[in-house]
Length: 207
Image (cartoon, rainbow, N blue to C red):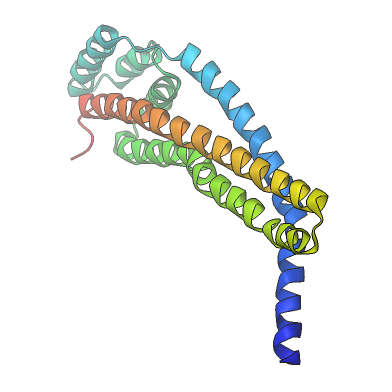
């Protein structure tokens, strides 16, 4: 019985010691979520998609590539003014065309797909981890709260319950922000990837 009691005491102490790291991580997560909201608003304001321009340039690039006029095709790609990822891809692809490295453009499009996935990882991880931290911050103070209840210490009970409720709310807030931003950005980037695939097809690269 003494061994069991000591083991439980060690587990309780270890769990209690995690409260401050969890609270600090939650505060950092909230700060990160607020920064991501600002970044999202800025990205939304800069998004610009002109389908007619994209189609026109795509046809021009296709004709120039068929005629092996790679410099002319590259000049058309450099005129693209679309969403940031699409424009960046077009400029990088133009450099490959100038260097007569058409076979590497398909690889370049895959690199951009990886880049878009990486940009989604941050908010996706936050949407999963933040509620977990909130749950940990909820459960850890319940031990001292129950001890306070058993001892009739209402102040200790109230303080620990306040910490539990606050960490729950913060964790859920950060998780909601991460989830919503992930969904919206996923739709954006799928559209960007469709535009990039159209440009790749216009250069007769791909499957």
